[in-house]
Amino acid sequence: MILYNSLGQTKQEFIPHTAGKVNMYTCGPTVYHFAHIGNLRTYIMEDVLEKYLRFAGYDVKRVMNITDVGHLSSDADTGEDKMLKGAKREHKTVMEIAKFYTDAFFEDCKKLNIKRPDVVEPATNCIDEFIHMVSVLLEKGYAYIAGGNVYFDTSKLDNYYVFGNMNEDDLAVGVRDSVEEDNNKRNKADFVLWFTKSKFDSQELKWESPWGVGYPGWHIECSAISCKHNGEYLDIHCGGIDNAFPHHTNEIAQSEAYLGHKWCKYWFHVLHLNDARGKMSKSKGDFLTVSLLESKGYNPLVYRLFCLQSHYRKPLTFSYDSLDNAAIAYDKLIKKISTLSPDGEPDMEAAKPYLNEFNDALGNDLNTSLGLTAVYSVLKGNISDATKLYLIGEFDKVLSLDLTKAQENKSENPVNEEVELLIAQRTEARKNKDWATADAIRDKLKEMKVVVEDTKDGIKWHFEN
Ligand SMILES: [Zn+2]
Image 1 (tube, protein in one colour):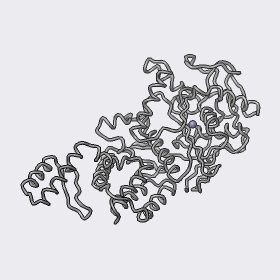
Image 2 (image 1 turned 45 degrees about the vertical axis):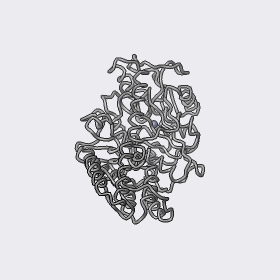
Image 3 (image 1 turned 90 degrees about the vertical axis):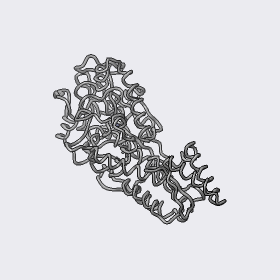
Image 4 (image 1 turned 120 degrees about the vertical axis):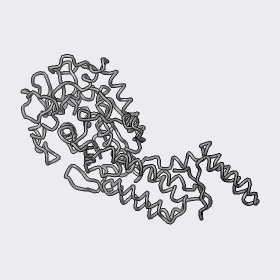
């Protein structure tokens, strides 16, 4: 597989550390609110990546954290803890908020056919691991204590700005709320590993540590959780592009300082979801959630299709008009597939060129829009219905658009069974030249809005559009 790597900013051949195995890490949600569909774009594309790697034969272990402590309003270590903000807003405890929004996140994922990662680890489960990592960083001289907090010293690294095109001024990007300069920092880019002093005394969750009672910084969570479950060598780290700096940059700094060697080979970043005004987020404009889309009558999988129609490395512009277009395309596609007859065995030889087309698309930096084109090639192809259904079923292991679900339901659905039975009786009646019965059945099918077609592959039917 060829993948664009943010480290080096080039397309590279994907070669995992251990042949056949892929260690994959995803920054999970900060569970203080519902997920915005802009964030969910990232999780959809990461899901496609994971499923394609499995499709290509890799044994994938995917780990994701749940941030339930330590993520401050600004990614640059200032402001209030987002979890605490959420708890105050809803007059609940931080842990109640965490539980509620973690469940809500996975509900949304389920609706979007996003697979749950193999390991899901809340940050509050790993306090010992964070403390251990911070202690080692202090011992090795990569960290210092100032004003009660423990900081990472970015000046100890030869190349802190690993993603190249970022600089200290970009720190402002991560700063969304009003910010006060932290005078404890020796260098502007230094970041907090462990807080004991914060201007917000009401921080709810605190733990004992060698540096006093406090709580972890956000960045250390991902480094420690990845090392805990993926070991010392990570193959792919994924996330939204807005996390490349400072979050991922800080993860690399502290992980490599801690481990003493290179940590993660490939960095996969998904671009923003925009609207006409720019990047969409919780704090700007409509707070777009999966539930909101559902309340407007959209199938969540239409949003998944909408995301798959574009390349993950391009910003995607959201509008209801474009979502409507995706809905029409989805409907047509499902209807077309539902007319295919599942009878017979797939022809594996005939399937090969179509599998190659799909592999060429996804294997080339996850080109999902060409992957969708491969579905249309199959539908147009001069191959049997059984082969078409086989191929679309294979592609859907990666695309996860429930493309063959209508087909599978057909035989399980009692209405469909009734239709099948009526068609069989009509055929029988026509064979016996019992035109009265055949006509009566035809009228009954018409009443049920069933369209029957005689094709070279036999009789096919579908419900009226
Ligand atoms: Zn992270």
